[in-house]
Length: 331
Image (cartoon, rainbow, N blue to C red; front, side, top):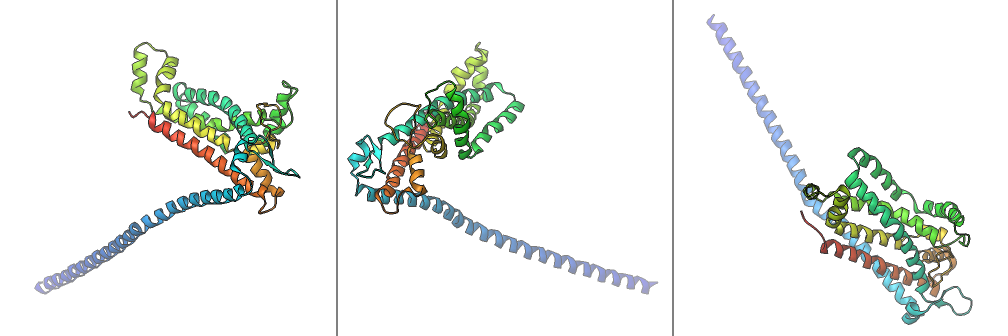
């Protein structure tokens, strides 16, 4: 009996020893795996700042490269055409067989006509839509309508261009018989439709950021829901609303395919919206299609026009940032 007890004790001791060895081995393995994971995480932490910096540097260098290219090629253009003629001449006939005229005012006029029409269309629709989504629509209605509006921003602009040429222009000619096939009115309206989702989305976000306590306080004082929206929420979100409008206008200034398809290619210095026009972007498209040889004055003119367009959009974006900082309300 004593022998059997000793045997069981010995065997139990061996079993305990084996278990301790197994536990010791598994703990060492876990420690090693933990160290490997820690080393891997440490390497990622060291590498990621360089990768992120490289991504940011690519964006900055690309912007600098674009600006440098525009400036360099623009100077080559001004070696052949005087700056005074470019900004003061009232005719733009670069393809003239005799001596071409390079006055950018007709192109600026066409661009501003289309942009003004687009702004008149987009701002009322965009703001009223934003007010409805922010102040009147239920959560379910907002989840349905807002994505539908934002789908408009994803439609290719070439589709908008053919829509303006084949549908909007014939429809407008029913009411305005003197309207030409290519005109400023039709692309201006369609561009306004295109930039409406930008104004709606950004303005609705700005209005939604206004605290509900301001709405509740105005309602408690006897204001109607419409008065709260117009006299309380709208002024409180004015910085975001103005910024959205300015960004939408800069988008309209830089629009290319709609005006290239439906606007025509006749640069005129006037305010007639029923006749053919040519914008700065449409001219760049025309020359880029191969109408001018490389190294000619006409070829370099697209860089001068592009530089002018770049300055326009840059000023608009800087103005939007100034408005945002100047009138921002923090709650």
